[in-house]
Image (tube, rainbow, N blue to C red; front, side, top):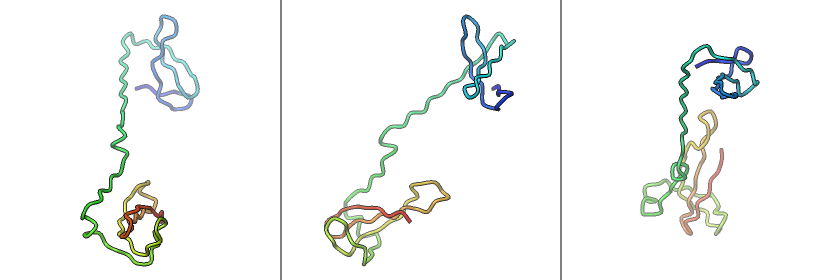
Length: 112
């Protein structure tokens, strides 16, 4: 790895004409390399939509979830819901509270 002497960004191998040079993608600084062999390593991480999806199954598992009274369902107006908490954002931010209506099964969230 080679870092840009001007801004400190990681320099990337670029071909200019028939020469391979190191170029900073941030400030554009170009440096010729004396090394005749440049090894470039590139790794691309792809995430499937399944990895980004939170699945909440609707089965008899609700019986194990705690219930709360006084939370109004936005869909049917029922005042009782199951609830659970997940950390859906960064660790330094509060968790997200999810509710599932005991009457119609509608799921909604509340950011604390």
